[in-house]
Length: 556
Image (cartoon, rainbow, N blue to C red; front, side):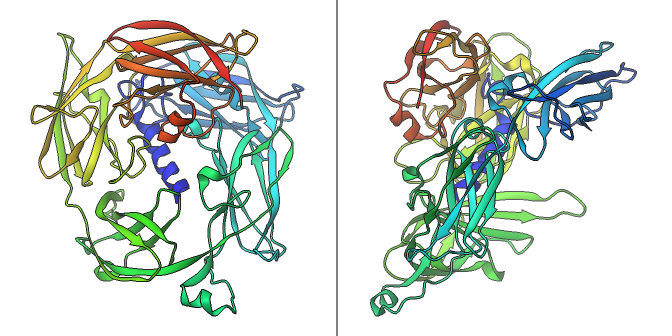
């Protein structure tokens, strides 16, 4: 369940975190308005080679994906026997390069180089991209008596590098055969959390006490054998290598949870999702009348939300998310006859203004809401709800339709590099400042949003233990207390070959800057800040201020 949330949030951040939201984040691919007519088209050619060695790799799919709105949004070709590729009639613009080939994986450390800028009237030649021999994780899944368990879904979740930035390819999966064996191939080198999701079937038991205390079922288990993802051990694989992760799936008492969700419309489809803080969860399509019946729910406290999908006449599906404030408590017995009420939510509207006399093309911005779960002990993570980005009109006004109820943070994104030094300075609700604390969504919520071109910045160098530049290091900034829940308060940068990095468009305030050879885990999560407290470099940024610093590489 937590993996699903990562995917949802990863997709959301890919569409938001540029410009105002996070000045250093990468620009996502997008398609949109047509390119200007009569523009000279160009050739892009180069070679894909194996690292180390430098041999050309054949049959690699090479894709050029536009980083800003233009048509066509993507080009693709296949490398020849020598690893050479050639793409003709390419429109001018900036492109992200994506490489795909079974048995090989992209080199995450050279990801910063996988962009191409095509200039009108100039061919782009002699490009060289590296791929590594892919890694494999294999093993055997057994029950608590050592017998093989077939048909188990086994997932490898990257705990370093790609996962930290929400990139595609952070998840891979396989399934066990009749011998309980599985194999997950085509992995990028790095560290992975391995999770086994067995069919939730009842465990045969002759013990009458087990039957009296509830059904005993196999449950999601993390390597080397724990129910809690935070207690999982990472499995490290090298390029071309195979790592083994064999373990036993655990069993737990489970209980029936049934009832009705009120407030769900009759049109379209609705799905109820239950999730707990330790990663356990359930999901089920609601039956007519909003009825649900989960046969095997583990003990715990669950937050509930409903995703509603409606289909228009030939139009794209409309997705709405609604939260349920009342937690679902499962503790030692079946829970039947629940009546869950959806939060009303409502439209959130507002208007932008900028400090100073500068004129802004507001239509280049978009806005979205990220909602924090009720009852979270600490802010941060932003894992519960989302709205799709809504465009801002030329006059600076915006409307986010059908926002979920609950406490939300406003996320501001931009579709232009010109906003990389901007930051969201203020969000006012009825004259009250809510930019750090967030706000409760209710029908008719109206916001006033102030942006400023005086974003702070950091420029620095990452060095290793010997004081030498750490090429390709991952650098993150973690905000101080009071800003942990802000979606735009975190930044990520990749150091270049000389260990140099830049962060722009930052909020004023105190930050902890950390550098890793490969980033371990989700740097927006509260437990990440706790784990690395005191291990980074602290910096205090004033509005518009720029700081230079040297950051020591953290190795694990």
